[in-house]
Length: 272
Length: 158
Image (tube, rainbow over all chains, first blue to last red; front, top):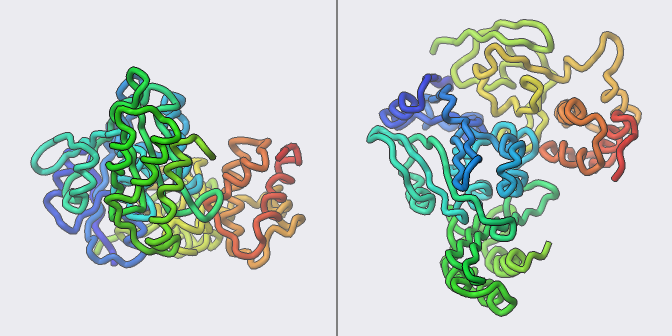
């Protein structure tokens, strides 16, 4: 079925177009919307695009970084200042998908995709949205919890604070197909240290619920403590709390529950 | 539904077609330009056999909205041949038995070209990474990896 394609010069015009038309979808890199069209999704009758350069802007010079929603994973891999995000960016697709897939689109990618969003959730990112109501910033956790209701708004950018050092941010994607495949589980941990103790622990999981979620019990097990074996084991033993994984072709819910603690232990221990 | 005029460079020559709204580049290339070398595999971005180069960058044509290539350069497997001669990558694929059913070969060759254009002396790990988005169900990948390394001049190491 042919659809109408509308291209706008500004992101705000594009946001207006998608907020006023329930059958409109914003086209970023194409890996979600074009796939839906190829599969015959008749709920999409309008494709909205924006040529606004602001959507592809990267600001990585300071302690807080901002990625335009249209920034591709290949561009992130080309930025030395974004080295802490290279592991999650590299874990996505093959080179073609990384040349196309965008930061903004990844926020909407269903299981077993959306790996980059797991990293952003652990980094407590903020999502800048433009809707018919105007522009606003929203915490990524809140955004993910209300993701289905965000389809009438346009994501402009995502921002987060740069981890203090390489040790403070860890990422692990478990996949059956090497070197690339959909996620069985994806894990990310941001563990800032203050005065020798973890302060503000954030652990995020992908493919363990309908959207990416935080492992809050595991975070509590680490908060105010050091990253020693006992505390790592305590965090790993609680990793399953609050999760609701589903069966899919890559793994059963049972299998995911069985291995999430194992992989969190490995992530926190720095094991390969 | 009206059609949209679309002009772009296809393997070094200008083409002008009319596409339906929402048509993907793979359909445009195969049905409107007549270039049957990019193949339809999964339509989901998972197999890589529709891979083409857009301005030298590897893309999946099945997930590319056709009208986004207006004014851009699109290279397909059909553009690799050099007159009556095979491209060195094609020659290496033949010499290394890198194709069995051949359905993945167009995408493999374009992924390999994207790699060698950027990195003429790839390591084996570089090659594996470069074709990680392309699925082959026949060869077990080893002959393909060997072919790409051979085309690169055998300068690579593991």
